[in-house]
Amino acid sequence: EAQVTQNPRYLITVTGKKLTVTCSQNMNHEYMSWYRQDPGLGLRQIYYSMNVEVTDKGDVPEGYKVSRKEKRNFPLILESPSPNQTSLYFCASSSGRGGTGELFFGEGSRLTVL
Amino acid sequence: SQQGEEDPQALSIQEGENATMNCSYKTSINNLQWYRQNSGRGLVHLILIRSNEREKHSGRLRVTLDTSKKSSSLLITASRAADTASYFCATVHYNTDKLIFGTGTRLQVFP
Image 1: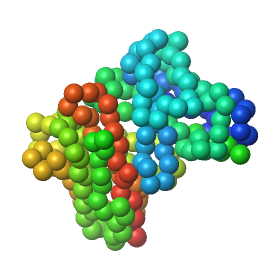
Image 2: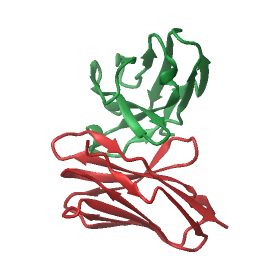
Image 3: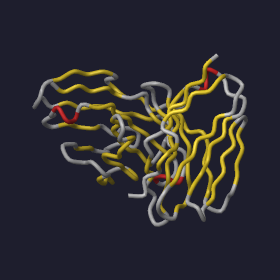
Image 4: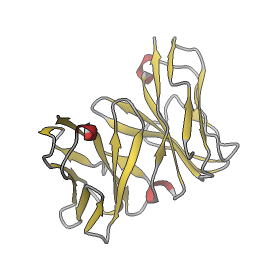
């Protein structure tokens, strides 16, 4: 089954404790992206990747890091989480370049930073 | 930002009625997409309409695009309780491949 898998789905952590949210897709997509969703603000892009070893900032990259060492994986790293990073995070992938095709989303990772 | 803005923000209807949601955007686009999100779940792609298209259908969904008015509409006909969800439009700017989402319309369909 074609899917984008994120882990963990739920996480409560404390300020400053490094964490990684993993994302994996099994569709051989070149494009992958991370979004955060906050009430009233819609989905905002954090980082995206056009292919292996190619990553770029989205609209709200501050406080986040990503890597793309393999085509299927695109982890999101919060080196020193802060309460304003409490949000619902989505990973997505596409066979098209960025928005030229359908985006497939993971089920989301709800992060709370205390 | 050319973020799309959906209207209305919330819509409540009875089963069997039609639901219409609108999306306006600010700059020229390559395409416009509609997504659906059940509460707290991942978004699901519904339909993509290119800038040179005016109307597309998919099952009970009809999407129109008016590039002169920079607007699109999503019509769900004969709505069902299972259609209850948030619906987002997303636009791709003409000179980029970046997809930017609006803030969504929350649709509630009562049985």
